[in-house]
Length: 328
Image 1 (cartoon, rainbow, N blue to C red):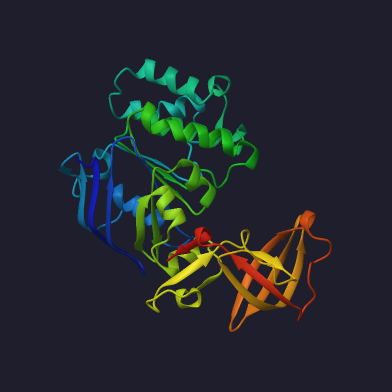
Image 2 (cartoon, rainbow, N blue to C red; image 1 turned 45 degrees about the vertical axis):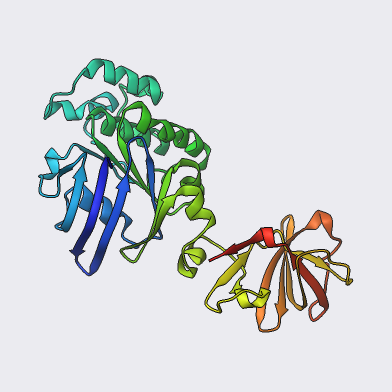
């Protein structure tokens, strides 16, 4: 049974439309919603939490909670700006939910959360004195202490100093199993998504474009739109390498394309091209090579080549193997 099932969820708020969202989330599954700013990620979280009017169904363990008031949905929400109570210290912020609901084994849970998120030395401090990483840990602790069924994380790492980001990511990776909570994490960061997610949904302009196991979505985009969003380069028609039908396209990673001045390439596919541009970037060169009407983008390491390998307008060979092709 799906622990959380979202069926045909549609919400029209202001000028933005969330359209026919369908998602299935299993128990102990870390679910990441990946999309650009303005794609509808936060709006979807708020709609699941009951903050926006909607049609469709939100089903938790077989029960439709679409019409259940927000405060009775047992949802923990962590915003990217933390939203801590400035008049309360860290301990009071974490325990805040006990003011309006009975928390089972509250003291034991509090101690476990404090130990888990390493907050013991912060409990008596005011929130205004905390760093961004400390504030985010407190916000997460407060959400977990309320014993939510569903934990919604809205860009939880965006305001965190990169130095502490890895530590917080590791904590997030363990939270949903440790506290038996469904986690939906919103981000635009591919590295976050790759590290944390069991399953990923790509959202664009209020619509889910692809959903599946993290490695499948990140390595095998469903269409050109998703591929470009994920940063796939060198997207060309498959007819270029002898495949039909003509509607099929392929992509090849700039890092695996080989180059040569001589006709000695030993790759599955070989093309002759003209160098358009070569740019030096720290430890590598970016090479742009025109093959007929198509431009290939290639990365070559500086340590492997003296100079930029080839001047503009020079004819060279480029090549790559079948195993390095991703069909889209």
